[in-house]
Amino acid sequence: MKKETPKFNPVPLCPPRPPLSSLAKKVCEKYNVFEKELRFGIRRNILVQARRAISWFRARELGYSGADVDKELMIYFLWQTGLFANRKISGLFGLSYSSISR
Image (cartoon, rainbow, N blue to C red; front, side, top):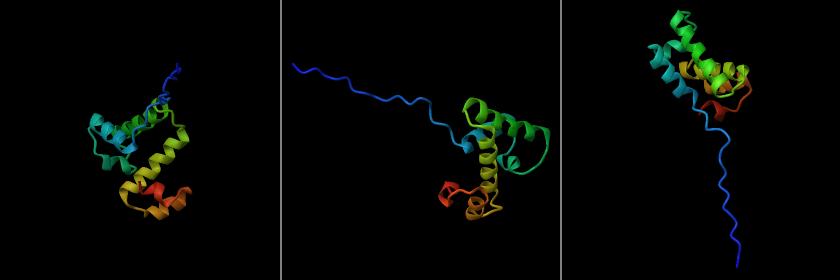
């Protein structure tokens, strides 16, 4: 008789991290602000709290480092506003063009 070896089904160690855009939408709904307002340096108290909530959730709940969160938020807001072309953003942050355009 042959012994059957159990099939190995790898279980991911952590669930996939949600994209920043979906997190930003959820925070905007919760704080009743527009996503467009988050992108600019407006210092209205509610916008500051919303930005802080995004940063806190990304760092504490999803395990990103503070520097990674800051960098990712900056790239996301620059990309969303359209103030800089993807190539310019990739040059500023030392990333490939394809990593910005996704």
